[in-house]
Image (tube, one colour):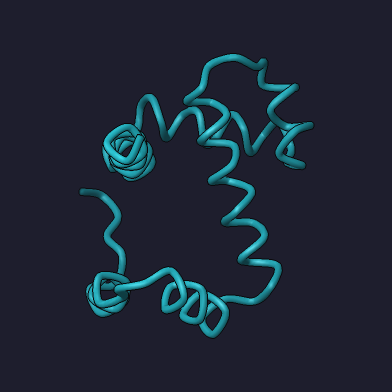
Length: 99
């Protein structure tokens, strides 16, 4: 992997057990603007994964720039890290099993 997150940060994220813990950790760790940017990228990833909208429509719906949509799309399709894909697929399976 070309880029690695700080191991201690990854361990901290893995230690979280509940939604409340995750929300508190993110609120402590990130500024409101950073949380908004992360949430925006995540929304873009979800909309791209649905495959129903154009990049411009996704940008409008997510409140992002088309550059952000292109960047997230590139990470979904071409980048070696596969982080977005892993989480999207797991959440889909989890929701399907819960239904």
